[in-house]
Length: 132
Image (cartoon, rainbow, N blue to C red; front, side, top):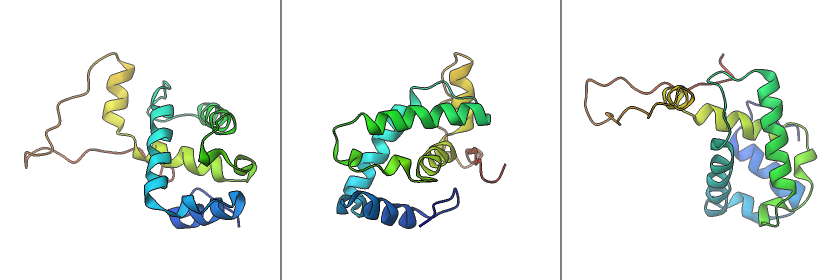
């Protein structure tokens, strides 16, 4: 199964189950745990709002080293060598980031207060590397 940036989460989860033999990838509880840890790891990095290919490659190396060096359940097997899986995880992380918060962090400012409750506030914009 070939994973691309546009692959659905279900396709990726199935590929991970096949590659690792662990059914935990299909269970939401474990998937969400892994996503939270992935977000925690990658949020420590200083990433520009629109990362270059070099920055993405560096993120992929950091993520791959983190997974391969872990003793957790999600590090079973050699799924990081599977073409497209690491790229998919990085792309999903980048798609979920708020560009406003990232810009503020890079400038040393605090992100603006959450005004999502007020009807006049615009919806937050997200960086989507697939559509850029």
